[in-house]
Every structure is written in structure tokens, then in C-alpha cells.
Image: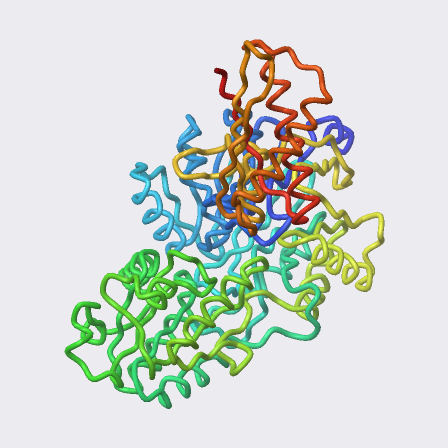
Length: 559
């Protein structure tokens, strides 16, 4: 009888709104009846196909439409791809729900909200072993190891079944802070029964085990020790374990530490205040005081490991930083791996540094970076420990999700019990049985300056066209009395050819010939047809002569 009632009740719904089409904008809804929680609220940085866009957010319309059900937001760790959309989401929510996460993550979130001048909602600090009830959804937190302290996984109990979300993880046995994955908790939950596992897929295509973060320290120390002058280390500002090793190496080499970059300054301050980053006040100096020390006594920690144009590293390399610049003899360590899509930007910065005369270290030269995500053997161990009935790979591009699914099949999970999902797809669980459900509205929201969400795809297409081939303006002077086009004047910006008298004469002749063949209404209301004819004719002429497609802006002037 109890089982029958359970099956008739509202299903448990698992709805990924982001994180399944790339590395970023992670957001997953867990909904059961009239209760709902949100796991993570991240963003993604734009790629070359999104010129002018500052940030890419998941479309969280479904959350706003059901905010009366929202009981809490659970953040697994403090990286931007899991926290970055919170300021935008919180501004749109009327229901000021509590946020549950570890102490460091909440500290980072508080700093981010302060930048947006958003009053912090209710923060609920949790840690491995914490338990909270959010309506009919019960959440247990367990510690995981990642490239940031305070990373958590969650085990969720509902009337319809159980779900485990690993969060981002690697099975590192020698983490910098000594906090290893909580294997006891994972095995305890496995004995209780895990109906559905959601597991990190980032390194599902990488064989073997991910190397320990502790292995980076000796390489950083060696690079800093051997540097004849100043050392600049670019890293993610939230990678506190890496920053700790940089500080330890600097101190061992008798060097003072300079911190620059907005997020680096904020995150190092928060981490030091909360006790996660241990460095003496006397070992840190202000950037303005750098000239008072010998160059071989300085280490600069900065942002810019992803080649961001406005980051501290890029501005220093281009001589645009307000306090620091680089010169021949400096050593630069890029202690990160480019996020997919950022490779060209990173290589551009490396080339700029090489032209200056800097000695550049990256992961291809020596071990100055290891991933924070588990590789294939660790993912298989997680599947073996949890013994899930159903499996849904998360956190990755399509290639990562499918590779993780193949690992699941090798571990004995039936093909029909593995779900490769897209953002907006839904899983429904009834009595521990998982099936696909109806999709919900999903997609992306662009942050473009002060505009959020209303950047039309046509605008992005036009920006790409301008960036690739430039723009040509064609001004047609039309005599309405004589019912003819008297002349056409051309100008261009960013085109690969010269708009001189010869080009103008040939292009004008081609356009006028086209117009003469047509039949147009030479009135003020009929100029739209003339404008279209001018645009099409100029576009075809330029393509035939240059094999380029600049944007054509036709203008009709009536005389």
C-alpha cells in the first residue's frame, strides 16, 4: 500500500538548466511536489562566436516561474561556473531563499554580491556531515576534493527516491588542506541505496588518474628559485590551494608577494580572513612599493590565466596596467589550463610576453598545473563505490558526457539506465524508477554591458560579420522627379580592399545596371525596394571581385 501511494504522488523531477553543453553555467533543479531546490548557479565566459558578450548565463525562467516552491539554493563550491549567475538570479527572485554552502564558498559569494550592491540573503553554512530538510527534500552534505577548499557533494532523499550529486571532484589522497573525499559517507549512502547518480564528467576522456595538487608545489618552487628577476604567476583567483603553494614557494625563496587583479585581491582577502590561505601579513606588499625591493625578491600573483583582455596579466603584458609592467628578464608562470575556447587568447598573451623577453612557464614546459577533476579511473571508482541504479553524467560537453556514459556501461550499468541529457530535459523518478519527462524552457541569457537577456542572435551574427569582413556603406542618390538613381557613393570600414575611384565607378555601374533592369516605385514609400536592390547588388559585386561578404548598409537619399 505504501508503494502504491508513493507512485501516485508527484514525481521527483531532475531538471538540468545548464552545464550539459560545455564547461560552465552549471544549474540543476531538484523538484518534488510543492518543494524545489537549486543545485549551483553558475555562468560561462563567452567564446569567439559571441563578440561583445561579457557573460553567458543559463536561462533560469523555470526557477522564476516556480519560485514559490523554491526552498533553498545549494552551492557545491566557489568557482564562477557554479556561483557566477547568483547575483542576477537573486535580483530576479522575490522569494529571498537561503543559500547553503561551505564557509569559503559563502565568503566568495558575499564578496560577489557586494560588487553588485546586493544585500546578502540568508547564508546557511554547512560542511561535510551537515543535514538539512527543505520541505520533502532532505539533503546530506559530504566533503569532496577539488581545486578549491570547501567542495561538497550532496545526497538527496525524497519520498520518490534518492539522488547523489558528486559536485566537481578528484580523488586526491594528498590534498593541500588534508581534506580527502569522505569515502565513509559515500559508502554509507551507497548501502542505503542510490537510485540516481549525477557525476562530474569533465575529464571523462582522460585515461588514468589525475595527478595530486601536492605535486605542483615542487615545480613552482623550482621555477621561482631559478628565476633571475621578478616572477609573475597567473592563476584562477579561486584556486586557493594553488595560491597557498605559490605563497609557500615565495616565502621559501625569500621573496615578497604582490597581489593584483580585482578578483585576486578579493578572493585572497576573503580566504585569508577565513583562515583558508595562510600567509603572514609581513610577506605581502602593495604593488606601489614594488620598486623598493630588488627584482629577485618579488613574486606577483595575478589574474589572466585564460588570456582575458582586461585581466591583470594581459594589461601588464600590453603596458596598460596602472602600477605594474613587464620587461626583459621577468619570469611568467601560467598556472592553469585554458578553458575550451580560450586557447587562442592564452597563446596571444604568451606571444606578447615572449616579445617582451619574458621567460614563460606553462603546463607544457613543467608541472605548474594539474586538473581539479578526476580522470577515467577516478570516475570508475566513484561509480563502483556508489552502485547507482541509474546514472546521468553532468558537467561537460557532449563528448565528455558520452565518454562518461561508456564508463558507466563498463561498470555494469545497463544502457537503458544511463541518461545523456541536454539542458532543459527532465528526468522523473517514481518509487525509485527513473524515466524521461517533458522538457522545460531552457537556453542561455547574455550579459552585454548593462543589458541582460535581450541580445538578439541576429545582433551576434552581425557582429561576427563585421569582425570577419567589415562594413560598406552605399548611399544611393535618387531623383524622385526623374524617377532614376543619379549616383551611388561608397565608404567602408574594416574591409580588405581599397574603395577608390576605380572601385566606386565599377560598383556604381553594376548597381545602376541592376536597378535599370528592375521596376521600382519612385516615391518615398517605394524606396525600401531600391534599398534592397542596392544592398543585394553591392554584395554580389564585392563577392565576385574579392570573395568577401562585408556587411552592406544601403542608404537612399531623395532629391
